[in-house]
Image 1 (cartoon, rainbow, N blue to C red):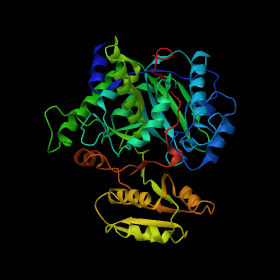
Image 2 (image 1 turned 60 degrees about the vertical axis):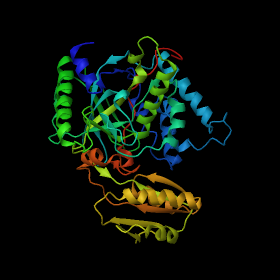
Image 3 (image 1 turned 60 degrees about the horizontal axis):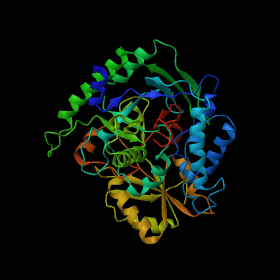
Image 4 (image 1 turned 30 degrees about the vertical axis):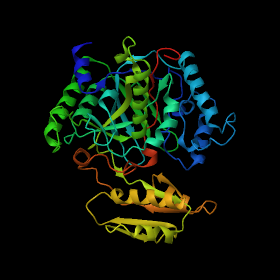
Length: 439
């Protein structure tokens, strides 16, 4: 392994072999939004299906989570989970073996994404070492979760990834580059060449363009920038219980927390069942492809993730919420089944709110979901066929995120969102997870 790759490996990073659709594939139909969006809106995903039609599309390679609860429906029908699983695998093998992809290209990708709210958001696609990541509470790895991981949510995601020949990333990792120098520097290098791709994104979600970072110069700039951030983190995020062997805090999971936890679980499982296999440490399942963005990129806004509770009346929710002294909860003036929450305390609102809601829905037999955007929340709370109460959470500040996580550990799950639903990552790049069927 070359010196530059050794330097990147020490930082938990690597240059992946990326698979992109061959010339002639319609990227506006190929690229679809992250599978964990619009989880209460089947209509959105039906529109995606109509748009993509029979064309090659990432829609055929992912499992939209709106369909995860269809296990009671005939498993051999298009509504059944097993049916979807079989077709995902079939499409992955078909696309790889049927000439849908260009030859693999060893490179990182510099990205520029426009959204309805921001003209440009910059990022870099690379691979990260799952040995450098751990979501367990109290762990201090180089790659850290920003929000709590629900272990019970992993099995269906593991079922999808286990043995899959390809991965498509919607994981976003953050770096704390306050001067915003690293990713723009990579952009200057990348944009000296024509883009690998550029495409509008469906359903009013903006556009996406990517440039190859495949030179020693680019990789050196990446390594040097990450080294500088890692060295700075050793003093900036020093914990009181810090041990001499504690890793620097280089990457924070900004989005796709459960997807990264799933990749880690599958790698740990693979290691256990293939203990002693030759070259195991270099197996592609050890790595996960991600997009890295800077916390301070002007194109990143932190938004609250709202809650919708199915089953109760607003009065029941208000009574339960009255037990939180730092939160002011009132019925919205715009909708009679919406509660607006204001935070008068110093802690993030979800710190006390989420444990209370978990207890409330469990004791009363209700269910809860997490919603991006007030418009979608209002739609769900006004649906008379499924009574629900919406909770509008207060704004979230992104400054201090790394320091808070370093000192107190992950925030409660679904504490913040990087932008609105339409701004979420769209799949486009792929990477091989296995060398051949079943290996």
